[in-house]
Length: 101
Image (cartoon, rainbow, N blue to C red):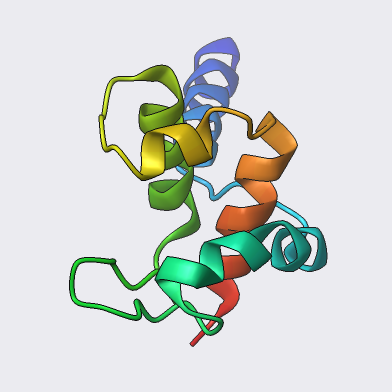
C-alpha cells in the first residue's frame, strides 16, 4: 500500500510540475501598457522584428522574461525592460498576453 501511495504521489507531483503559472490578467494588462509600444495593444507586434505575444503560452513568456532579466538571454531593447519587473509582474504580464487571442 505504501508503494502505491508513493508512486501515486510522485506521479501527481510530476504532473503538476508542468502546470501554467497563474498570474493576474488585469494587473498584467496595466503593467503591459508600456509593452504595447512594440508588441501592440492587442499583443500583435507592430513591426516584424517584434514578436507576437497574444496567445503565447504563459509559461513560455515567464521563461523568456526571466532569461532577459537574468542576462541569460540578451537583447538591447528587452533586457532593460525586463530587469525592473518583479516576480508578480512577470507572472501577471505573462497571464495577460496568454489570455489574448
